[in-house]
Length: 133
Image 1 (cartoon, rainbow, N blue to C red):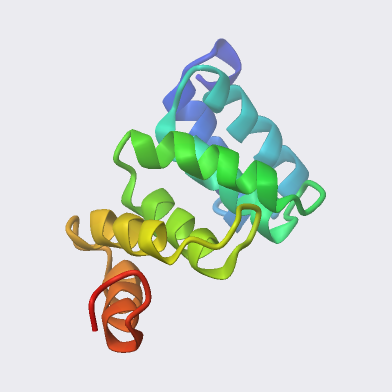
Image 2: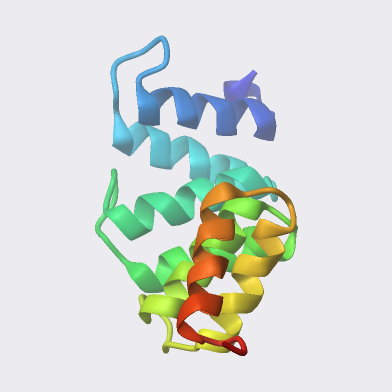
């Protein structure tokens, strides 16, 4: 199905290659299939591609590109991408540091039950980063 152009299958196959599910780990192939799914607008693949660019898995590390893909997925409501984009804003990775936006994106993900975003948002409140103390 992935070779026939089904975005969901391409994203899933990318995950299989990324994590070695039923196949040996191959980050380059994972990025290839994520790109194919992203070309069809698959929001989950956008978040995964952001992860690959952020960590340098299967592609040269590029935080600016990571933010680019996270933003697309975050705007479509993907909580993992919202959390990662919030972290990028908080740390100034690939984008200028903006603690208010960091807290906003972490809140979007936290409101969807994303545990790491909830912890991040808690830290924002604890340290007064982008939120009232």
